[in-house]
Length: 628
Image (tube, rainbow, N blue to C red; front, side, top):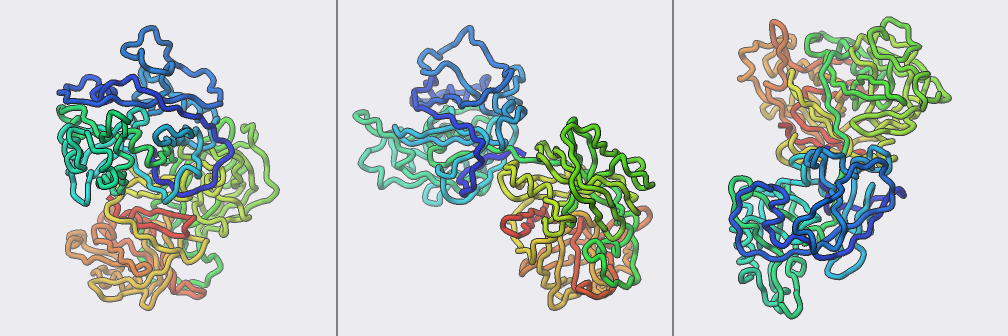
């Protein structure tokens, strides 16, 4: 997933950073019109009055092998450029002749430790501007991290909601697009928007009284719901004897998209340290799960619990679903499908040493075919309630979601018991505290190896047979949810377990009276709870033995789960599952038992499909937002 990051909180720096000092010089572009032609060379634009612009770039201290580049034979209107060429930093999708950009090759050749670069631009004639490949410098910024998703993998183009002064919208009313561009000096926009901006700040055709700067208002640019404010001292340029003018200029008026495009150049970037990051995104696919009943699910968490099976509906047509993704292990890589499971912590895959019936028809890892593999010092046993595996620990490089995790310890399965699943293994996403043999989970190593820019991953699960489910390592995709994210603190660093206050229907408590615990688990299909609570829920929604009339779904009530004081409601269209010849609720009973089982609920995929789920290990919390 591609993200633009601004206003970053302090984090530790990797030592493997490649710094490149930047020097301010004049730009070869003479007008804002030339800037918009950079993006839309064939656009039909009517030019207004314009201002000359200034800025420049340079290079770092790392060798990129076999880089394709342009050897100029002619240069038009570039004679005033003080440098010898241009180093493009945008995406390959817009590269001429589809040439792989320099930064892309840095990543492929493992020359940077993180898939990001950052730009710090100093003000006025100050020294110290720099471009860092592979990291960012905490000395250059303060405040919190704000992530702005890109609209596409072309330029660094984002959604801008509005431009406001003193709370009043003066431009970009109703939304527009903005490009973050280090190759543009000013803030450039459509003619009418620039006229409004200059008028509201008290400028006459861009000119201002230099003595009035301290009295001029701030200008706020709202990007994807986040406000970024620039004071007059930043957006007014002092030209000495020639006076002062605003750093806002127009590229004229155009047709279509040009009336909605803005360029946030160096005036903006000098105020906000800008980090251009690539985070890992992994598509997920639905398939059958090896677990056959709700009882199997609770044994995943409490394998030694004494549980008494109650009357339940097995829901075999819908219960046995899971979400899986692809990983590659070794050198050269061997490919496997793995269930992405927030309810466990180990990674393991079937191996060539496994001869049990449950290992058949799977891709099998062969250690002898990987030059980077080495054996660990321990064996491994994992019980999942329904199914178990035994084997030995191995160490190798794991590729997942486009990043390589070096020297990852994982399970090399030699036996698999009662695992009739379609996938080749399981990829645990919970905390290390519950990992078998205390193995460091894959995501923890991603964080330690600086492969993600935040200690966060998020899950978006689509319903029915829809495509588009995905797991994002290191970030959040705002296009997957609407409204605000609600953060729920975790009870412990084990599973993603939270406090649940009650389960209500039409305002009446039907289960979890007095409070209980709930686990957010992508490895469980249904909403699972104690027998009595599930029976009450089914009764209140009008289900008989879990079965419902498919024609009555629109008349069935919502069910509300209150987590740590926050209400999350699920409609009948979400909790009723259609299969074969009928319909049933997505509520499954784990029976009654001891040892905390009577207070345990599992909010599985039926819940997670309704709420985009963000797992923040650093803050020890789970974020939930209404999925779209």
